[in-house]
Image (cartoon, rainbow, N blue to C red; front, side, top):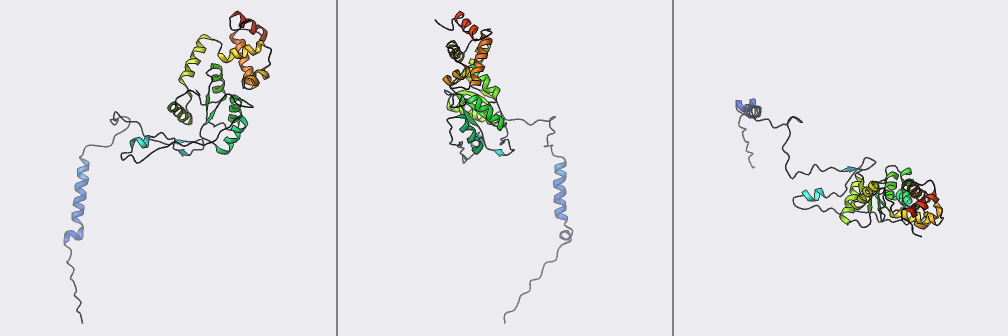
Length: 267
């Protein structure tokens, strides 16, 4: 029969029983920290030294419902040491040929940003924008159109557009404009801004207003002008009003007469 060997336990020393070594170690750490240089900064009296290449703390933008969403700023991709992050901005593949369809798509898809043209079948981009913003006040819309006319820009911004760029904008600038509009900023394309500033300084009649003046000369109504130019009757009326103001005319007939006087119209 195998014998069981009993191992005798070594008795604890006095120091081990009283935890003296651990207490001494803890006191040494505490005393050393008491006399070390302070590392906590009291803001704003003491400010940390900010590195020259510091680009800010990455944060996620919140949507109108308070949810944090990635906006593909690519900052995390830039700062990731092993380059393990690749950001590919996504998009909703949805297009509309008319304003009513555009609003219906918004109700279904709720995109972060909608790209809207001025020239659309049915109601034009301005009227579409007004109706969309009336139903969805937080809707973010970037106008992407071919018109650089100052009055079109002003009408779009007044209707609630978050930005206005033309279709000849470079891809990188368009992406940047979309991100700015999503973040709540107002963006105006460089060429559009130049036209807007020039129009405000000179009070000159824009190309679109010249088109309207030519149709007014032919006796077309606001509804006719809107149909011929692919804009709403309300927008056509606004163009006529701008013409009367710039030409200092009391009515359409006087506007046409002033147009001939200034060389805007030819016989």
